[in-house]
Amino acid sequence: MSCVLVIGAGGVSSVCIHKMAQNAGIFSDIHLASRTRSKCDAIAASVKTREGAQVSTYEIDAEEVPAMVNLIRKIQPSLVVNLALPYQDLPIMDACLEAGVAYLDTANYEPKDEAKFEYKWQWAYHDRFKNAGLMALLGSGFDPGVTSVFTMWLRKHKLKTIRQLDILDCNGGDHGQAFATNFNPEINIREVTAPARHWEDGKWVETPALSTHHSFDFDEVGPRNAYLMYHEELESLSKFIPELERARFWMTFGDEYIKHLTVLENVGMTGIEPIIYQGKEIIPLQFLAAVLPKPETLGESTTGKTNIGCIATGEALDGSGEKTFYINNICSHEAAYEETGNQGVSYTTGVPAMIGAALMLNGTWAADGVVNMEEMDPDPFMDMLNAHGLPWNVKELDGPVGF
Image 1 (spheres, rainbow, N blue to C red):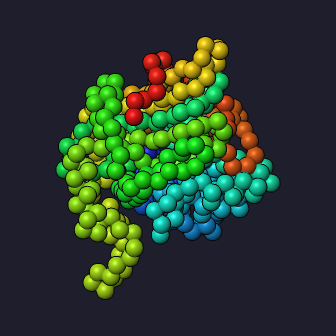
Image 2: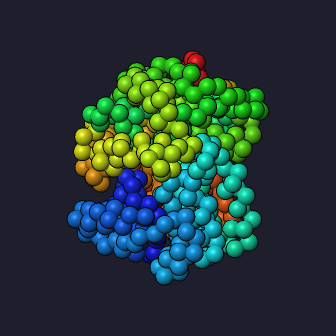
């Protein structure tokens, strides 16, 4: 039984807190803090109603390290779970080091002033966490997170080597809005409008954003256009799977989403450089995020399913030659909302955050220093996915994707 502090009060945090409350044997004392305490209070009220569990709430600016250190020392958690914005990762890691507590997040660091996300900033913390005898687990969401664990499970149980890897993320849900994002709008749009990159023959290949797409028929969703993008697990997977010849990440978008995004980009609303408006400095993308529907409000109206998984090709573990396997999860938006009051995209990230935290707190996953999901034993995580709402399937395919 452990005390945990969660930072951030969006949809992912709501799911994670609900799932923690369902596992009181591990998470006996739950604390939640964000810049807006009323959001924390709303989550706490839902958890009280649905699960009968008490959640303590606080107001905190996660970028204020001294305030974070004071809060951590006041609560004395065994683990800080960072579900705030990616550009708050480093301050929270600094606070954890100063207060002497373990750390977990779901997405890697991204500077405020540059739409670029990579692990180098957080990997640089490794020695500091190691010398402090603390573990910092990076990327315990779905992608990154589950997709990394899926890949390493295949490498442990099905494939001796992985030569090609394609990660396919499909949200087949319909939220009924003209334009909305299924997770934080600012982060979502920064990711989507950034140049695409994939790993091939030992180097990064860059292409213009949203310039490459192919149709793929997703089980229980149907055919969708999947666009080539960069995603951080490509960086860690190419590091921890040295034989990897090619790794790509694909995400589906509907025609309406692409149309609206193109217009917004053309008129400058996706920019991250400050502009002066009525004598005040504003960031266009932050203003846009403020007027778009909040992802945590989409749960009630969202229908359909997500289908996220990995297709890996390599030398079979049983010596039968080259084989291709497809491992994935299908999640119902309606079922996610019924259980936690949140839509499926939040659910598929919040549940893995809870699982990673549980494995750290019960000692199943233990290490000193900064570690990625690929470095841990995939089996206990995979078992918990099946037990906590994200069951997975694996099947052999005739060969790699045809594109």
